Image (cartoon, rainbow, N blue to C red; front, side):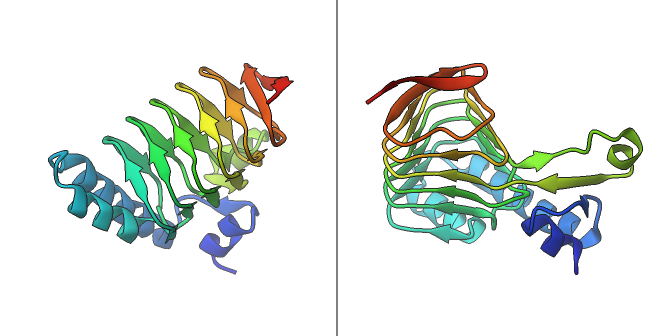
Length: 183
């Protein structure tokens, strides 16, 4: 099994693998090109996102700058909007449903590092997927960690650190993020 296959199965993998390095550099080149475009070059921006992401369904709008690791592990639904400074470290699958709105300075972190020092220092890590349901609004400066699912029709308040699953139809916020009330 390749290191890339291991990473996509949430198994421990070697991050300095040559194939993964090439993939990461290609994605960073596309992000650089995207971030360097004039804001009015909407068709070119759209073309680069379709080239970068693993799956794009319908209308997608992403403000510059945007950063990701591989791109091909990102899937976005219809009517997706990400504001300035969105970061998706897609070492694992990151899936966004339809009608997802992401405020500025939000980050999605599937990579997890071993707690064992020698293993961590050897360049090993694993990635846990992130799934965001339909009709979700994520407030500014929010961090979503690997292994998290956020349910449908949910609002995550600004400044949250989402470390565990959040159910559908709720308002949740805080550090760590917790359900405040049903919507």
